[in-house]
Amino acid sequence: MVVVLEGEVALHTGRGDERLGTGDAALVFAAGSCTVRASGAGARVLTVWLDSEPAAAPARVVPQRGTDAPLTAEFNTRFRRLPLLPRSAAVDWGAGLAYIAPADHTTPHSHVDDEAFVILSGHGRLRVGTESCDVRAGDVVHLPSGAEHTLENLMPHEELGFFCTWWTDFERHRLPQPQPE
Image (tube, rainbow, N blue to C red; front, side, top):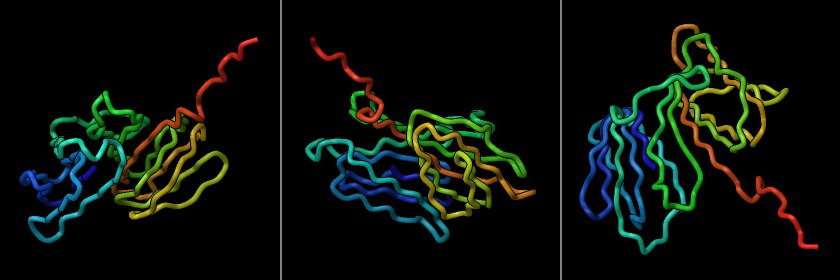
């Protein structure tokens, strides 16, 4: 997955270029190689690598423009879901961009999923269970399944922005199967 945080880029997979701008995201499938070229100075891009399709699948890019998925309110953030794998894929995960208002915080909550945050802008305090730590742009944190967490924006006049991704480990959450007698 490629998320354009700022500027414009071209994705090249051997089947032509796909142009993306600030707020756009794209999944790149089975490309073998993918080149991300900035169209100007100052482009910032986040890439996430997933092993999700057989290498024999045809290369393709699935773009999502910033206007394709509006911001919603989730856990007291402005939140935008990023493109997901097709339903036929054997991967259970999701991703999004979230923004916390100045001097505000997310609603304390937990998930059955594991989750990871990449702090994109701002400065905050993350609480996971009874532990807390300060986080800044560039920090990456893992939130284990079931752990209550909240992220507080410590900036009085700026949003705190972060990329989040979550996934479910079905083996860990599988219920015990009844054993034959």
